[in-house]
Image (cartoon, helix red, strand yellow):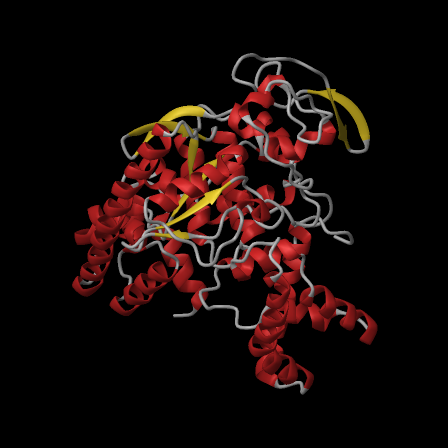
Length: 482
């Protein structure tokens, strides 16, 4: 049984369809095939969902006892682990609420309880929370006082220009929390504008869109406003509205709007871990899931994310405003990520969406070459051994370009070095860590670079995979030439 066949059988098991039809299609599957499918489900983090889907059909389809026992054990282990995680999440959310810090649960913490309806079905490795940028430092301090620790001593201010969340905070009990201040990495090829400095709550209502923070009283808690928005459709300027009601986004601030205050403006009340909190709007949550799977992970092994997207759409099918979602997708320049992720979810996870709105975010050009590359990474269960940065060096034409690429990788901004090694960027020690970075680069990549130069057959195959990964990421991030 080849990889393609086992993936097709796994997808058949997981898709929602008439039980009678599914029974007929699954009868006659050999015992050894079930073992292979169970292993694939484990590799993709879909074993609990597979068990839940097959449980009513076990007697009819002849699922082997060994496979059933293995899936049930994984399901129960996931339930037990997530029960502990939700207990800790409840404690953290209550503490943040008591400190008057608005918080939004992201990804697994919201998916498992609200979207899947059974916390065991969606395994979680950590807890992802989003707070306002001005509450970021206060949140880190609160979690630190509760026994959470991050590696090193990175300053929250350094994070704003480097990544969308603080380095993982880990408790003595092994729980890990990532505190986000935004949803897209700040350095993704100009997809978004440079991060702005934090603003106090007292000043938010007094700031207009032309200030460095690009905020407006429309997003203050005290009132709402209205103003026009000029946005380009196929090169032509048009007056348009992005947002709910009369709240719209100026074009020059659109990307930042989706990432910062616009998201908070569209939140709605919800309950997670028995705590009343804010949750993302359905449109923002779907965009977030698509960007996370496509742009942040290059779709590598992200089959579970497609089911997250499909289940979210099914859960909110009567609430989603598709025109709004498409407008928000364009406002943050994520058309390629959202369209590709939803196309793959429709093809493999049973997602059903209206065609007309999605046609407005369909990337220009022929996607026939992109989809097979994306699917090759989507179904990839093995770790990509060769760094895409080594592949990036290999792709440079001429010694000068290769040397310039190396310098760029060696001399990262001090804020990025500070976050990577957990040292304050205003400390003189940060320059010492450049030496450590060079050492780490040589330790990690020198052997593979030499093997690539010697044209070893084994490394050539890995190099080809990494070059394809770079090509897909360049396409997703709207890099010039794609």
